[in-house]
Amino acid sequence: PANPISFRNDESNPSLNLPSMVLFPVVASDVVAAILFAKAHNVEISVKNSGHHYAGASQKKGTLLLNMNRYTQYSPTGIVDCDVSMMLDGSIAADLSVQPCALSLAKDKSAYVRVGGGENWDKVYRAVQKANKAQEQEGGGYKYHVVGGGAGTVSPLGWTFLAGLSGTTGGRKYGFGADQVLQVEMVLPNGHHVRFGPTEWEDAEGFIVPRTIDVSGMCRSNSEEQDEETWQWGSCPDEFDVDFNDLWFAVRGGGGGTWGVVTSLYLQLHEYEKYERYEVSPAEDCAALGITPSGLWLEFQITYALTPSSIDVTKEHSNACGTGNGNPDYHCYGEEDVEQGWARFLVKKNVTDFPDGACLVKTASDFGWKDFTDFAVAGSEGTRAEGHAGDFPNPWLSMTQTINILIPSAWIEASEDNFKTLLQRFSGPYLAFGGGARTASDQANSVSKAHRDAGGWSILLSADDHDTDAFWGEFFPQMYDISDKTNFPAVFGANHAGSTPSGPRKDNWTEPCPKEWTFEKRSEECISMQESIYGTKLLKRLEAIKEVVDPNYMLDCAYCIGNNRPKAKAVQDDAGVAENEKDGTSSSTPINDGGVSGAFSMGKNQPMIFLVGWIGLLQFQYMLN
Image (cartoon, rainbow, N blue to C red):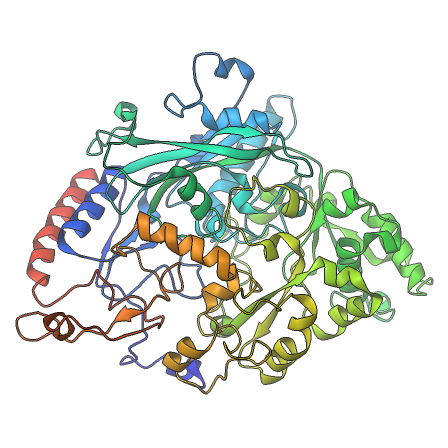
C-alpha cells in the first residue's frame, strides 16, 4: 500500500507478523529439542533475541518462535584472560576450547568475553564495567574494552551478524561487530549443536588482523545433556554436510535468524584506552556563532572523520573517534586530536571570537565516565531503565521505510564539491566506517565491500519522492559502477534497514521502485532489499550456502537470505494435497511473504501433532525452571 503505516492498527492486516507459539529455551538442549521437533513435524522456526530488527525478521506468523531472553547468560562470568601458556597443551583444533585465546593472541589481544544467545548489550556492558571496576578496586585501572552497539537493548547477535556498526564504541579503530567474533556456538537446522572458528591464519598486508585460511568445527555428541560441564565435543558424523568455512563466512555479515539458533558467541575484548566523549555547549553565545549540534559541530565531526587532513588531523587520530547517525556526541578512544582539530576548524570557518574552550564540552571527563560502558549505564539515570544501558534511539514508526545509503569514501574524497554535496543533500552520516572498519576484516566474512569502502551512511525515507528520485537518478551513478548490468552493486546498509524499501527498478537502475506498486509487483520488477544490501554476486554465494545449511527453509525470516526466492503458491484440497502437486506443476512468484508458503508450514493435518509435541516441550521447560 502507498501508506503502510495506516494499517498498523488493523487487526485483520495479513502483514501482522505474530507467531503461533512461543518457547523460551534456557539451555542448549532446549534448542536442540525444539529444532528436532520442528524438523520431524515440518514446523517453521523463528528466533528472537531483542527484536530490534526493523524489517521484522525476529518474529513471524505461523511459526514456533524461540524467544531467547531466558537463555543462560555467560557474560557475567564469561571474561577470559589469555596467555601463551594456554596454547601448550595441544592442537588449537583438538576441541576448540583454546581456539578463542589462540586467535586473540594472533590479533595481539589478550582477552575475550563469551555472550549467551539471549543477552543484549546492556548485560554485556554491565559485565565489562563490573570487571573493569573490580580491576580498579584492586589497585589497577580499567583493563577491557568491548566494541558494541549504541543501545543497551540491541542484541550482540543480530547486530553482529548484520555487520555491527559501532560508531560510539570505537568501530573506526577496531572494526565492525562482525570482526569481533572469535568463535560461534549454534544449533543448526539439521539438529546438530556445533561450535566453530578459525584454526589457521596468516598475516595480511594492509590489514590489522590475520587473514583466515581455515575454519574448524565440532559437533556435540550428547546434545540432550543440560549440564555444560559434561558436554562432549568431537568430530561431526559422516553425514554432516555443512562446510564450516562457508558457515563462518555466512554468519558474520549474512544476517541472523537464518543459519541456525546461536547459543553463544565469543567476542574479542580490546585493551582499555582512555575514553572521551565530546559535545558542544548549548549556550546562547555559542549558538549565535553557528556552533550547534546540527551546525558547525556536525560539519566538524564529518570533516574530522572523512577529510581529516583538511584540518591537519592524522588518519590515526581521526580513526580514534566516531558517532552514530548525526548524533551530537563524539566518542574517542586513545590518542586523538579533537580539541586542536576543532580550534583549527573554527579558524578555517572564520569563527575566531568564541568563548573560552571554544564551546567544546568533555562530558566523559566532567562526569567521570572512563569508558562507554560507564556512559551507557549512567545515561539511563532517572528513567525506568536506571542501572542499565539505555535504549537510544527509541523505535519510531517510519523506521519501516528507512533506506540506509552507503556513501563511498572515494566519492567523498574525490572533490570538494562532493564533500559539500554530502553536507547539503544528505542527513548527518553515520560515522562508523573507514579505518579499522576497512582493515579489521579477516577476509572470510560476508560484510559487503560497500560497507568496507564507505565513509558513512545517510538515511533516506522511501516515502520521500524527492530523496529517492535524487539518489537513484543523480547520485547512485556517480558513487557506484553500474556498467555491468548482471551485477548490481551493494549499496544499502544492513543494520536498521526497513521492511518496505527496495532497490531501483530492474530495467532502469536510475529510477526508484514506484511506491504505489503492490508488494508483488515491486518484488518482481525491482531490485530486492537483499540484493541491494549484498550485491548480486555476494547474495548468490550466500543463497548457495543457505541451500546447504537449511535446504527446507526451517528458518525463513523476513528479508533474510533466501526469503526473496520464488515460492510455490499452493492451494490445498480437503485431503491436504496441494493442487500443484497433483499435476506436477507449480506457480511461483518472488515475494517477501515471510515464507509462509515455504517448505515448512503448519498445514491442516499438523495442529494436533504439533500440540502434543508442544506440551512435551513445555513440560521439559517447566522441569528446567
